[in-house]
Image (tube, rainbow, N blue to C red):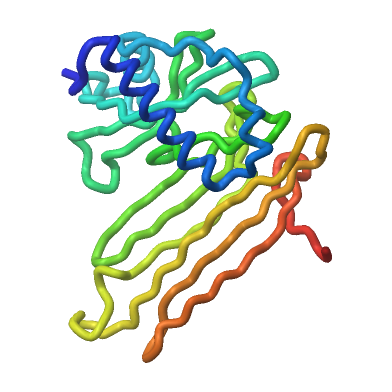
Length: 240
């Protein structure tokens, strides 16, 4: 059983989720980059097509009848001419820290593979590089803490290249004067901002880290680092 409606409602819902994702991503992307998206958008796969492929691509192939719920998806380039889709899913039968997942679905092959990330946060657009970069997230929680990993990736066929990643989190469920440990509350968030324009090579990125916490007075610290894409990695840029 799959907790979803008919194909038409599914497609409409996914398009709405995709549009909302673009709005969220656009808030962190330069206005010039917004014009990089080509037209028209590639055809969307239907629900049954996706479910069949994802069941065949589960990491644990012994449980192909596992319930899947599709949360959203967006297109991504896996080569110079091939368009695929990153599909965020829900596994209601798995434990809390394993109930979210992501698949890469390639319509040209009618195949999907489960990735080691809990969800896709959408495409990161740079003019001249439409659909090349995507942001994936892993998350977990326990004993009052939350931990996150954000990875900026791109695909070459099935091969996923992790270009840059950062780890951050908080202890907001296990801190403060009322907590047994009386630990100070601390939280950190990391955001990636891609930079670029038509004909601008190589692609650059700014990593912004926001830290809030400390005792007895809370302190806010914001730092940034600049990176440049060199081969399959973003490397720190020294100097101006």
